[in-house]
Figure 1 (cartoon, rainbow, N blue to C red):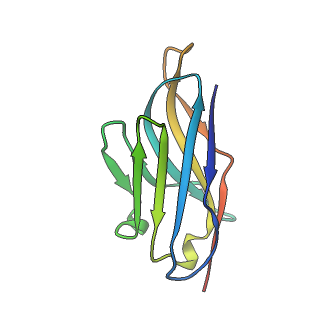
Figure 2 (cartoon, one colour):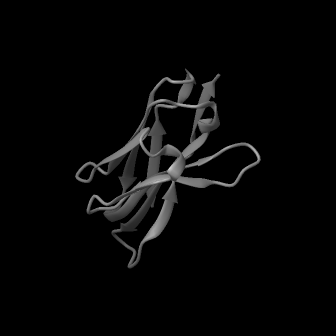
Figure 3 (cartoon, one colour):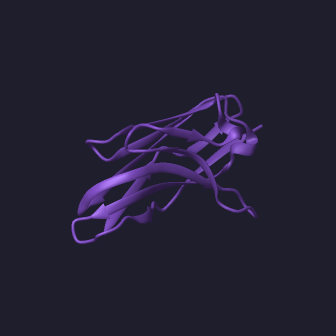
Length: 121
């Protein structure tokens, strides 16, 4: 199995910054995409940003220019730098990884436990 552990959430005022980090561990053979999703109360989980093993990045339109995703492929970690935060960014943020383990053939999606980000106005 693969475990994803997130850190860095919290409470911040509008306009402030937070940095989320996620570390993947376990019997990992390789990881394809790593990314961040978020889910606000009463809403569906949505993609925030994703980065491939080759460094290709996609952002949700709502965070472009404010959030930056980065990855350390050797350490199996992914980070999300969030600047100019807005109250509508308030949500539980989940780390996601498409990983192949040492005993699996294909890739499966793994999720972290989630970390709360609250932006006050």
